[in-house]
Length: 408
Image (cartoon, rainbow, N blue to C red; front, side, top):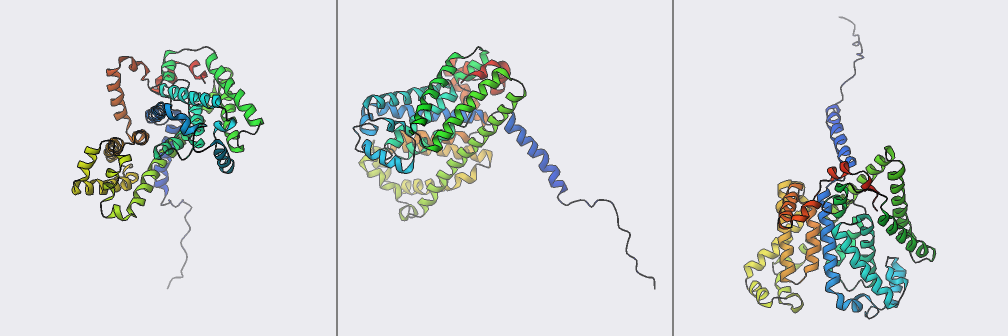
């Protein structure tokens, strides 16, 4: 019998079972980081969201022009004193509470319209997005009982839109960058100086809450730093700031996509709990309410068919619940977006909720793939030949004009 002797220990490294996973995950992570930092992610999706939201808000403001005082002004049943007490409790932002004069209200309403036009055209997008958010919050927080779900969607997405680089394509800013127009950009400097001149006394006088004051001052300081870097340090510091801006943009786009999914998921799962949605009769009742029937003959004709009501009721619940799960498959996502656009078009026409439908359709469009948006942009450019000059690829805009980044 031979004595047992343990085997000589080997000094060769034992391969980890996760080595292959690490080798596969590393390049994918590197490619993902390069994609996020090298340029604005989903530039066409952010542009279509910018256009859709600003167009919806502009249409709403113009539609309510004759009733603006009753909705948000001194003639509103929700009085200025009541609004001030509520805002003092929840610390929301609305510049309408800075003064109770009619002149101040008219100025704020006019600035809100101007900001919507600026954002729609993509002119001075950074400044326009901040003014757009300020106008939305000023009016909707002044009277939170005057709107519906459409205003709520605009209210939320207007804040997120500030953090995106939504003027990279389909904008006057992109056209300006492609044209290589340099210079000191006096207009942009004046606009930011005026905004800062309004922000400074408002912060000193306590017109802004601490959180909003810090956020707005951070935007002002960041813009000043960006201008200084572009003008005096256009090398590595500017590249770093570009990367930081791209990362913030990508995070904002992710948050917007998650928010839209949450809207549909919450709506669908709450509907499932309702007995009228369970038995397939929920849509029958709004089609008989006068406030939701701008076309009574059409609404009553649809409501007279129990099969159509059943299909529409169950179909609404199914697509809302399934939406968040369908976005991970490219082709299925495109089909689901088409269904959602059709559904909201029907809601806007049949139920008389055009602004809610427009806001949700703008949010849905961010899930469309870039080739589809390219195709739509080409069709628009054919209809309006001059629009072609504003359809500029973001990479081409960055390569053609360095001084154009000085814009505010």
